[in-house]
Amino acid sequence: MHQFQSSGDLIADRRFEWARQSLAQGDAAAAAEISAQALERVPSYAAGWFLLGEAREKLGDRDGAVAAFAQAQAADPDDRHGAALHLMRLGAAAPGAMPQAYVRALFDGYAPRFDRALTENLRYCAPELLLEAVRRTRGLERAGGCFSSMLDLGCGTGLAAVAFRAVADRIVGVDLSAAMLAQSRAKGLYERLAEDDVVAFLRGEAAAGERYDLIVAADVFSYLDDLTPVCAASAAVLMPAGSFAFTVETHDGDGVILRDTLRYAHGEAAVRAAVAAAGLDLLLLAPAAPRTERGVPVPGLLCVAGRTG
Picture 1 (tube, rainbow, N blue to C red):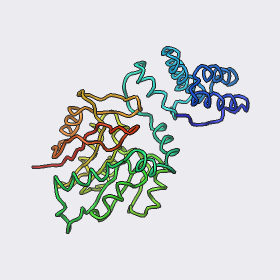
Picture 2 (picture 1 turned 90 degrees about the vertical axis):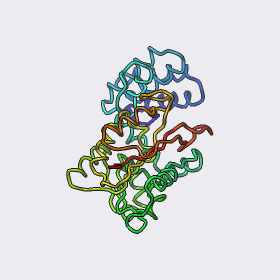
Picture 3 (picture 1 turned 120 degrees about the vertical axis):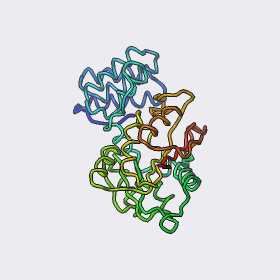
């Protein structure tokens, strides 16, 4: 993730850009050398350290990459580049949550081209899969065929609202990225939009007495390592007969792994445990591919939970 942030030194900035272009063209050795030159001028340049880490990793220098990513994280405690994720992936740091600043910066930069990239390039279909799953598990008999209120977790540009608008009387959305929320606001489908972390927002809604008939998280939980907090917080605002529908990327094991794409994949056992810990029952847990990567379907799970008692 190459966010350009000025080092404050024009020569260092030019060398960073030269190094970035070299790496993009496959010349990791040149990228490493030139980014190191930039860092000689500005040793606290987080973007330069991050780029050096990527170049060293391409060269097979794991220890050098770890050292560079650690410097990038130290230079930017908010970790807008996601250096911590690379340290986790390289086995140099314990697994943990994604830095919020990284997720926010990632999607702020992605927002203008998000809809087109997902629907045309990645064949994204998570909202449609979730709508069909909800139809299958609970039907739409309530409120004259509609859900009275829907909460869209990690709403992004509003693609889930587009899919569900015909079956939800009111829709509320929450997302970390202001730029993504601007895109969703332009669609005019939400009664309310909030810029917040999803778990923090859910806890605030619970404290305020808000309740939802339907909670949806379409391709969002790939950015969360532990699903237990978000499932518990969702259960706290779910109406007694409501549905909690979400997708995850998955793998053959039981736990949670960080994929090379810097997205989390959750094993079936981890999903079941998080839902059960929230006091909910799984109404549906089925294999699904909500998106593709390089033309190949990404293994996933389609989940609907609720209370059956």
